[in-house]
Amino acid sequence: MQQIALQDREALAQLYAIYHRRLARFLGRFLRQHEVVQEIVNDTLFIVWQQAGQFRGGSRVSTWIMGIAYRRAMKALRHSASRPALHGMSVSAEQTASDAIEEAEQRELVTRALGSLPPEQRMVLELTYYMGYSCEEIAAIVDCPVNTVKTRMFHARRKMKNLLPELAGWPMA
Image 1: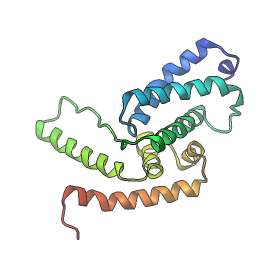
Image 2: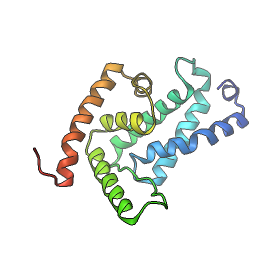
Image 3: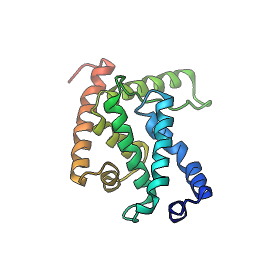
Image 4: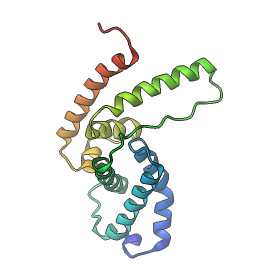
């Protein structure tokens, strides 16, 4: 970050290589349009370029960068007329066709359930389960207290627990 703060273009290129794919995967889970994802990734890294000197090391660099991307994504979601969607992962060649179909159906159910959550709850789940961040790191990323993250997680899990059987057409107990 110190090199980027000194406007070292090579340091920015290295940071870009490290974070571009990670940010694109994270943002792609919420935003349908590839162009919007790429724009937010580039905006995020441009903000890092401009504000690297303001990074004080109070968190990991990745937490700070993800926080910038999170705020840009939330702004895009608020201004977007389209519903964000998650994209599934590719299927291993070793799986049988029926396993692949079942896995795709499960991914679709989870995608639909996550898509129906409020963005703040959905992103907390994504940051935890897909990106591996702790509640403390998520609190830094989304700029809220840890207890707020935990509350969002609680409500999101509860909604998912109710939504998944309903979307799958399973009888409710």
